[in-house]
Image (cartoon, rainbow over all chains, first blue to last red; front, side):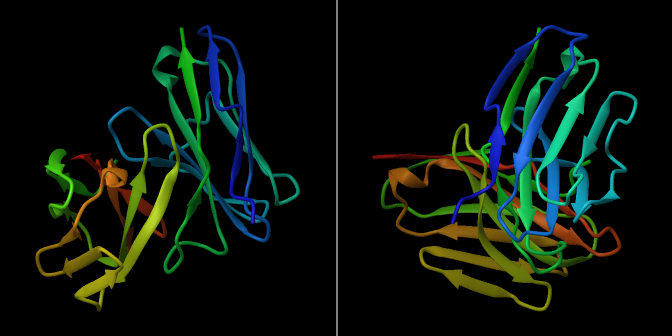
Length: 115
Length: 111
């Protein structure tokens, strides 16, 4: 069974440029998460989808971040424009249903460097 | 914001020794989970313990939970060099419906 796939694995951009990350969750997993992980810290939730609905985006900086999961399968996270402080690892995870009793399955992440 | 704090922040041991990591959290939980993250990789789920459980085992892993003290510990017995990684606790806090990760413990196991 394929795991969570993310691309690209690494991205280097200059500040004020746009950037997009893509995630394909494990087949059949209804719930998809985007996390931000700063160096030396644990992941912090940005947004959670149940199928195509964003059910928790309270931590997503909506002035520059956006996300979509149009068909309830793969998802894209976008930053426009990127700032120096956005340099971090962006992790995608999925689970068969919402949190509570289920483990989350993580992708390898996209390491973003903003110069 | 991160609910959990792991202690110690970093731990170095020799192969064969046991490693103990602790996690403290702030609010009532439904369950607590432990994850491992190898350098440059995503997180891997290790074990889940529910709020009504006190201890759980999985292979060389032993997890305890003390809800009165809002703390958990992860014990890795007979450690191996391959156990070198960062370990995170994550709480499924009541009334938030989200998983909140701690700050992690970086474990180094020397062969």
